[in-house]
Length: 150
Image 1 (cartoon, rainbow, N blue to C red):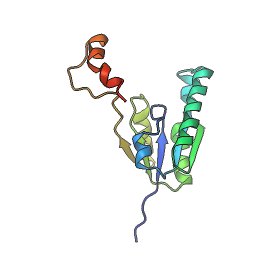
Image 2: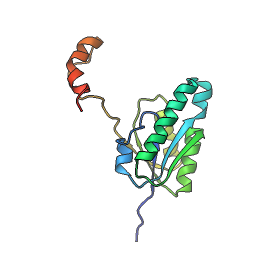
Image 3: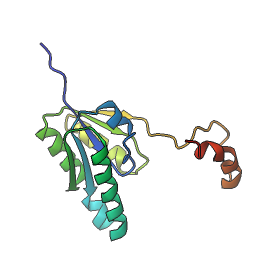
């Protein structure tokens, strides 16, 4: 009898919403968010206020989602996510895509280590099918009503 593969959900800074597609697809899966140590020390140099804001968003999100296991770590994203998946005997990793520059490299490394990565499409902020915008204000006038619709 075949067993169902275990899936973990990896959240990143662009997916801190209870409506994140990976979270919605796996409401009972273990969830991890990793503060990316190399990025924090070598890259963005985020202020304490910004880091605390992100931390508060994660805490709020973790209180709102039904997933029973939720972890917050700091370190190398790939190493921490792999360790988390091994701890939970997961062979699958669910994540919602992001525009972040290192995202594709992370996915490649996860797959290289044997994880089956299920990527959900990144959400569009508003539906738009017109020509590529050349200036912001004309574009904004086309989408303003949609952007503020509940």
